[in-house]
Every structure is written in C-alpha cells, then in structure tokens.
Length: 490
Image 1 (tube, rainbow, N blue to C red):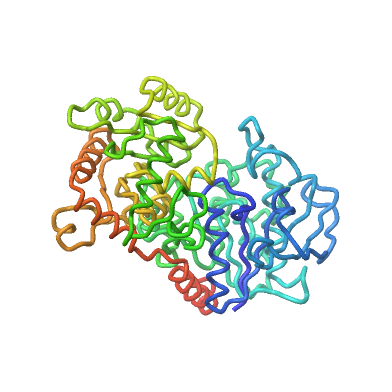
Image 2: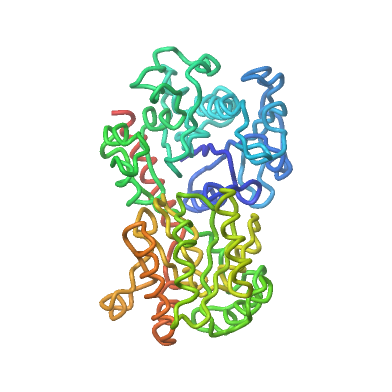
C-alpha cells in the first residue's frame, strides 16, 4: 500500500508539539509494517536543511502569492524516509515557527501557506505532479493539511482514499470568508455544508467534511469531540460522520525515549535496576537550583503553558501543597512556554519559593528528557487532551503521571485505586473535575503513595512495562486505510 502523509511538522526538523513527534515516528512504523510511505512537507528552513539527495520533481510556477514554487523529492537525513518538500521561499523561508511570527502573531498569509500544502498533497495524490509515484491513500494531519481533502473531492476522477487526523480540534485554521477566492475552489464549497463556519472559512472543516475517514489520536477523544463540551462548535459535523470517526492512540518512539540508552540524561536505568533514576533526580535538582534531596518528592510539568493544559490549577494548588505540614519538602519543576500571564505567574512562584520551585520558560528537548528521568511524578491536569505524549514518556521513564481523566490521558493511565494496586495494573493517579480541589486531592494521593517505597516502585515498574509502541498504531492505521479504500465516501 502506497501512503502519502501530509503535515506541517516533523521531528526532529521542526516541532511545536506532539504533531511533530507523530510524523517523526509513524512513517517508520508504517514502513516496517510493509507500506510504501512518503511525506509532503512545507519548505520551512529547517526542513530544507534536513533533506538529502534532493532532486527537482517539477516547477509549479507562481501560485498562492508565491512567485516561484518548486516541488523537490529527497530523503529525511535523520531516518531516510522519502519526502516531497514544497520549496516556496516567499511563503516559507522566514523566521519564527511554522504558524507564528517572532512576536507571537499569526502570519497574515497562513491561508495561502497552508492552502499550498493541501493543493500540492492533493495533486500528488492524483498522480499529476510525480508521474513515477502516486499513493493509494492520502493521510492529512490537522488543519494545516486538511484542505487537501477539499481539493481532492472536487476532482471527478479521484480514486485516492483520504484519511484526516485531528491532533487538536481547538486549533481549526479559521480565516475570513472574503479570502475564499484565494483557494481556487468552486463557490459551492463555501456554504454551511462545506467550509463555512460561523461566518468564517474553516480548514479543519475541510478535513472533517471531505475525507473518507476521520481519526483522532485517542479513542476517548474521538468520543468526546462528538459532544458539545469538547466539540469546539464542530460536534454536529463530527456526529454526522458517525462510525467514520475513530480514535487510534499515539505511540512512543522507543529509540528516542528509552531510559536505558538515553544519552541526554545523567545515568541510564531500567525497571529492574532503578539506581540510575536517583542519580538523574539529583542531577536535575542541581541543574535547576532545587535543593538536592533524594527524599523530597519532585513534581514536574513539561508542557505548553496554556489554559487547555490546566496549569492555572497547578498554580492555585501549589501554595497548599508546598506548605502542607506533612508534605516533606515537595518540589516543582516546570518547563514550557506559552501564555505570558502563566509564564509570569510561574516565574513569580519560583521567586517566592527558591530551592523548591524552578521554572524554565523555553523549549529545550534535551531538558525535557532530563525532566522525564529526574522527576518523581508528572503533572498533566489538562482540561482536554486529544492524546498527550507527556504521560506516555513519563511512564516509560518510571515517572508516575498525575492526570485528569479526559481524552488520551484516560486511555493511557490506570488509576492507583486499591483494587488496581492489588491487581498490579495501576500506573498513576487520575482525577475528574477540572478543579483545584480535585487536583490537590490527586497530588495528596500521590504523596501518600510516595511515602511507601514498595508501593511507589510498583507504580514505577508497572508504568515502565506499558507497551505504547508505534507498531500497534501502524497496524491499526493500515487497517483503516484498507477500510477507506474499500468504502470510499459513503
């Protein structure tokens, strides 16, 4: 089966979140399962630098505001996966991340930048741009690539199956209706049954309406987004797709996230020999300016600092947790950036609690590894969470997750109830309502377990034994691709 994956990010070349990790690992897993896989990516500076054996497939000329567009085919230098790259300097050769300028504002031409990605993906899928290779399935990821589904559905001779994956429904790619003409699509699509969304143009809706199958990155999130609470205004569209919407859980790249062989951490360790984790904790405490104390329970946060992630709850729970008479020197380490108000609040907490709270408001992949290895518990109190990779990485490193029971968090963490502990299936602590009280209670349960070394080691080792392999996800995606090929649009 020939599969074309369309996306805006791929680890390690460009990453703003979990989407990049998925595109960094899923192609290899699909190839290992027997698929012929290629990617199509925008020609961002880091992506062009990460290519080798690049050759020109075709010159596309001026389009979507760019004076020159060249389609190149090469291989990603870090893993050898074949990739088409859209070389359009006017649209992609600029500083900042793929979506935002350095000042945090959205690029004003994002509609053209990501419409071009969708257009190229659709025309590659139709066999028009590379006569030597055409896919059976086009798999578009998130709103950035969703327009590919609209371009393909307008092609009368299309025989390619399309799958659209929602990584986060909250980010929808919304643009002014007045810019619809820039897409080069027929006007019949700019209606409420098409791309129109409350007076705006929605890229996300293109994927939801015009793909053969829709997936999310966890089974629970697939159910949640069909409700008004989690549907971000698109729950009716999602419910209308019925059984064509499903969830496939993200995996973990075991070569990158492996405490036994991770060169980025202080010392390697395994579930059978955990001594190295104690060394990782001491090294992390020293690096972050925390009091080096093996007995102090160290909570960590590795996250975008946004309201979605529920980190305001951490700030509100923190004083009671730090000052509780029985808490035994609790520490908190935070790595992440995002909402300026949240960044400032965490920095203020660190200033108020020197040696007990440390905050680094920057993206640092190596530090993220050291946090996973050095912390005792990982806080993920998200208001909603499509899948979440942090809790998966944490379990792999023997760091016990404390998570809200939503989306992929509920699918991947087993609450440490007495029955679950007795059955030796518990891997962490879950809480229900998105309230300070519920989080505080979950952290109190965590601290109670931490003070029982035998029980704590049981939680660590059970988490490290979990199999979140991409091979499992790849098998499920291949089955879904086959289903889409057999069923088409119904």
